[in-house]
Image (tube, rainbow, N blue to C red; front, side):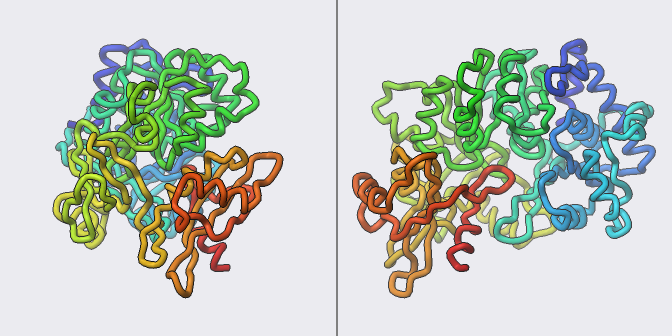
Length: 508
């Protein structure tokens, strides 16, 4: 059950349909896509002498060749190691060394940085620039037949962001990836031949996972010429491709509808925006629905269970008459078709409905463990459940509401305070653009609540105004003791706010 069979089957049934696009230009049909993959797979096993199970890194900015390299790795029975192109060279080095990657595909500007590592890392044989003529020649090698794979063979080694230490490699099998694909069809949206996914978010992360359902159903992988997210370019691509689909971080939704280019743009081709990877506050999703319409699906997952723990469907998002609409929009939906979700206490005992604890999940999408890290594997998968490290609660209707990462919870005077609740309240203030709440050490209380505020252009709200607003929505003890006004919140490459950086600012 090699996941590359998705391409093999589609190329057989729809050989002439477009498969890969760069901006508005179609660069390959499905037959051409599959033929190039087969040739490159032949070079990996022949010219480079790789064996089944060897790791191959993909350190690439968004580019159509990403898909050819990725599918060739799988077709050859190898393991893909996708790496965020925005990492530091020291992080590239760590991942390549830890994974024992034999080769790395890279876009041209990154290949120059990475080439010296060939002489430093014993396992690394070559850096292959996907924009060189020599790479193009590799795709004309003798084609390799699709290699057999056991469902539990390793297919994808995904390194976590490492905000609390060295990144860990989540081991995902062919079964895990196929489950994520099937779950997309079950819970996100149907795909028809010719639908397009526009990769404005990194292909090495969630957007790439969501490219696989499009390959399975003869959709088009569209890479923006910018290689990333530019609101004006994104809107032009929507106008060009019928039934456009996206995976966006919530901050990207915010930037799209706030762009000057959005006013008057033709978004009639937009099929669905799947959002996840960070908190989407109720006020923000309401603004997005008002601007775009109910063309949204929310997902909650993590690299250890890619894109698949809970979901808030388009049907629920557009149900304006639901008696609990506000709570539903503030939630991350219900457990996905293929997953069980529970809330555990600190002793791994299930908690009753409504009580806050750690979110755990199990199902065929959950990783096999962490690469070369049995201790972390045992800790995270203890009892057969994936322990997410996220705090949340389930209600009587099965909706999961996230509170925060366990490390972001504030304990003040022995009371647990969840920053997200305060952030939700402050975001409804008309002068607040973005907000992040963290705990600051306090001699008597242990921690106290402080808030970092990005104001909308114009008048700054006063601390007194924000205090009054908080007291209208949350308990007095939860309101911030101090407000810091900053130009922008620090974020990682996927748009998540780096609360560790904010805590360091406080310590400084």
